[in-house]
Image (cartoon, rainbow, N blue to C red; front, side):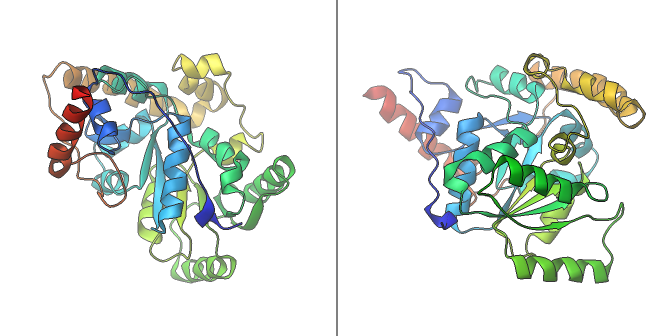
Length: 310
């Protein structure tokens, strides 16, 4: 089955009086939350799956970023990472703080869409049954373990290759080997699990060079889905406490990250939401369907006024 035939449906029921976020949706736009200058799409899982299917069906190459507090804070001092987020075809809210900020900005239907969860949805859904998958990341042997686990869980899935990168940038010969392997496999979807900010920079720089259609940065999904890291209970995720669950399991690696990032995020987002400080987002690709732009504002308002008048 070709991925060109993939169809994902996400329906919503509009209200008679709609917010700015809903104005964008009425006009055919994809509204975004502005989180310290990083644009995060106001999605839930159904709409995220629909965006992924639409991107595959469009024939354009692209990559998907899952953005959380760590991602946003790293982008504050890393221009290359900020540009990678802005260049993503799809940017999903990976964590409840993104959702809470989005809802305060009027995106009341925004929900948490974690990278590991989105990965399972793509493998589970019938509309992606014809997709060929490639797994890139993890420690030695993890990508192969993940391939076996996914194949067992989703027997009809097509996993056509795996690659375990070193804990450094690829050397020229290694890049050539990867390019040749991907050229031979021709995967539709290329999963990247090497954590932020490495995975976003990798996708941005290598998408034009690899014969694949859509790349996903899914971080710890490789470890979650092979049982190397225990996933959090649903109530922990919905309470915004998954970071604490992760710290308990990996204190040496993660404790300093969260002690540094979380308080600073709370301070800066408070300044932004109170209007005391402005964070201007980088432009996002219009042809990829990401978010709205100043150029589209007239169409947005016109469509919203027409809807409210009916």
